[in-house]
Picture (cartoon, rainbow over the protein chains, first blue to last red):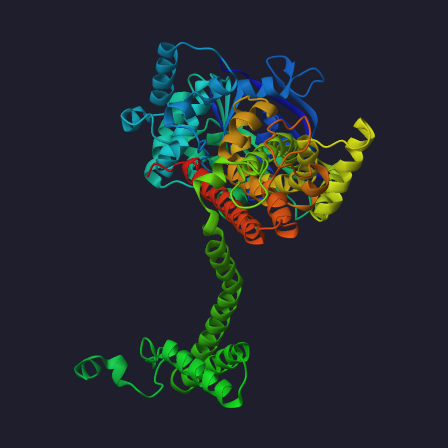
Length: 259
Length: 359
């Protein structure tokens, strides 16, 4: 299931503005890769370019290669819709579909793609995805209620359930805990630890303790100044980054001496 | 008095701290001052022998002044300004309500005379004096408006979807511009357009219900586009991104996520657009004309519609003038009721289709 992603010489643009420059990185399967760095340095932009969500923004484009399993995701004959089916995404703000019930939210990926499924199959899928997202016990009695009635942390786990219900190979998470309290954050971190056996997970976070707790590898993004493109300064195993980083900039950022 | 001795804040009459006790007018004093001003205005008008309109003007000015001066003397400048603006806004609202109330009262007063079963069951076929009804005109209005909606809603909705979801650059700007221009087209021009178009297509002296519907569509399409566009813009981008991230193609995202989320607003906007064109007179006058009998086929011959019916009853009364005037008023009443029902329907749509929070 889980797959390796090779990124080489990736430049990411908004119109003519070069936002992220020259990223070379290899993201290992069955691991959690954390991306840290100051605001505006291009972490989220880089993350969104991994499943071609970047180009949804008008004028946004990408140069370079992102290869998953030997397939260039930005190849001329690659369909972005197929890419997104294999690389799921969880956003910063929980965004369940307001018109759908909890049940329908979980199977939204299948139902919106008109996949024909038997009732028993969907029931099983919903239970499996909700159990996978550690939400089943809290919502099993009210699956037909609207998803927007859940608490913020529950909504975010509902979004994770929705993302894993389509069985992607890779799960991208863009600051999934930034709007949540510590208890919900802990629930989602535990969940990530479980999910990494089945998925390749890439997470963007502002919380360095979180990066240190959950990830196996960490990438540090930085930019030289306003208007300059962001760069991947250092990419190393998490232990090394947080104890003995190669770059001075990384050490400054992690120890709080940044800027 | 016992409270003022107990609470230290109230005792401190001198400006000792940032929070000072607020002197307030008694609860109904503002209203009382205003009414007193109105009365003084009426008195002034009576003394000078002016008419009722001047009396109202005097009263409103004096009342507003009384409220401002009274409040300023007791409560200070900020509160006085607040009361002054409140008085002005309320007066403006009152002025805006006068024509509405007067219109509804007049139409009810004169229209109820013929608001009977016969009006809704008979046409004007072979009626020259009393009796008769607007059965043919009511059905004609409903049919022509329905055909108009069938033409306008798909075009308008799809245009709005294009503008919000797909449009970029010059084409989008051009369409937006021309929709704005269309919004300002006088209704008689829309009627002449449809008249010219159908004369070119079918020759002289053609009269069809469809012609009227085409003219009304010219007026309705821009309204539908604008209201649907605004509603679609309100759908959060996060929902579209959530759908894309699940590997759902764009068109399916629009059909299954964006439109259902916006359905309440779309329904309301479309219903109000229908209400906007249902009372149009000029374009129907020159395209569908009027007949006294019942024609329910919009693809063949003249049809009767309520606005045109009312117009002809009023401008070309027969020997029994009062009967014709009564029918005109009742037709106006029925038209107002139709518009009101559509507005209520729009409210119900937005209430029942709005996404539920489940809290």
